[in-house]
Image (cartoon, rainbow, N blue to C red; front, side, top):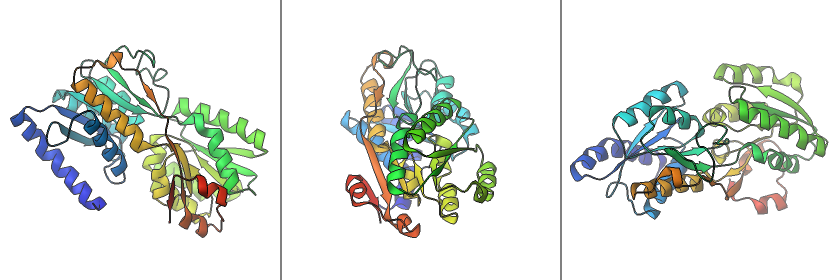
Length: 325
């Protein structure tokens, strides 16, 4: 199915199924995400597959209320509160940005999250093994993969000596660990690191407008929902500067970025769907341990590599889980 058709169908389902759910008395699940439906087909598909694995099929045995913040983080508290007022059976908070607003909206409705940071440090759960409250979910690694991403970037751009590390200062915990790990890994590889910060569209534009004076050989984009939501803006700027760049999610590579390495969003979304299904069957989130990602994927955009004049090493290409021509 084409993406536009998928989104149209998604919008129709969001409007129609809750009405049918009330008539047929099937459970209604809230789906909350900080971004927009376009570009997140893999996440929605994975979530639906997880529900199906647990015995629930959208439109037959479960209805889903979709709430998209359209990259406007300030909308998330209201969207989460709306789902809570509707008394959905479970809220699926499908990215790091939506998890805390969902938690603030209700202490009684079960919440299954999908986050990149440490859910214990973020105050989402008491512990990974025994969450203890009305939240549990999946933790996909972000900052823990910094060294691996730098190694991949160096393998693809072996002549690089000065690498920029772009981080979001508003994402304090992840930013701190990313910068620390980047410095350690870069030192071991003989690379120089230049830390760059941006937390708004305007800051990204200003940063790239003055990037020439930084004399960077490559760019490492830190993890976090903000940079993922600005992936088109970032890939356009890096193309304009002919700057080889590595990202944490394949969504950025699909938008024209060069390379990414991180947890499979489709697989992690499927795990969320499975947990939602288990809770619908009576399980308590307090007793469901937080799942940590085990499936990671390396994705390379060959077209972007050619545009940058890069030859992807055959050994790197052979390890890729996804290649975009």
